[in-house]
Length: 370
Image 1 (cartoon, rainbow, N blue to C red):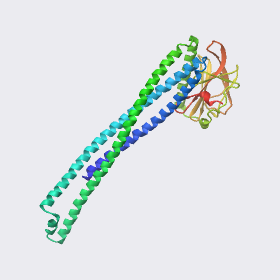
Image 2: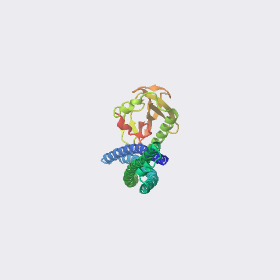
Image 3: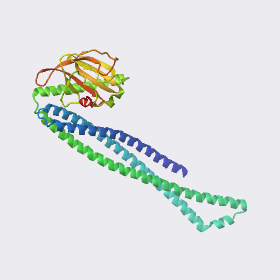
């Protein structure tokens, strides 16, 4: 009987560990969901602000594209959370069913013990049992045996009560998980509707752009994706930089990377900074040069600087004066600004500046500049 209870408690402990593991996973997913929700709210706020300026249609479309990407990722994270919750509920339900069945078996065995004891009492009570002993030692052994039987019954009662309490607790956890699942499913459906609305809005706004604006928009989006790939591959092969890890504490305080440069509103997370021909490009923070790449098609350089786990990227550079592995300080020149063509076909000189978080997210670079 003791072995059976031990098995029951082991099953419950196993279920508890499984639930704790899934709940920890849900906690990680929830942090990602909270972060994405915050980013989406900021994008929606920015889009609302952009719409006040009727000349910024291209910036609005660009920002809508980023919003759609973030919302798709959010939908995926919420769906992952639903799968985890479903798994948790199924695991917990199976364990509860097994424990309930085992408890029923314990209760039946205890009932049989009581029935046998009552039947024996009716046929021969404890007094007769004791006084029928042959001698004092035999009577003493019979008293001990009676106590052992009584203790065994009391122990089974305590074990059954303890198991009942644990089962009730597990059922409460199960009920809470079901409520969470319903809330998560409702959110998933709501985000899907918002995503569909965003995509319809994007197509509508995109159709109002000129062919040249569409071409520029496509180039911006491709450039951002290429930078993301470049940063991820560099991070994977080289890890993090040795210095500059506290860049995360300098949001809104980083200096402009182009001497005398001006931010060009484009609705993208990647900032475009215009300047004079030959203007110096400078590192915005202390760091380590992780990669210097030359784009033969665009005939321009890309410099990646690591700041601990963060990366800043400097694209469309006419020249690069730093080498991989070199340590740089804030304000140090790393090259010169490159030539480009704007949406109206006019020549301009600009730097494309990006900032990437440790998790690979592209941050709103312009919000980090002073």
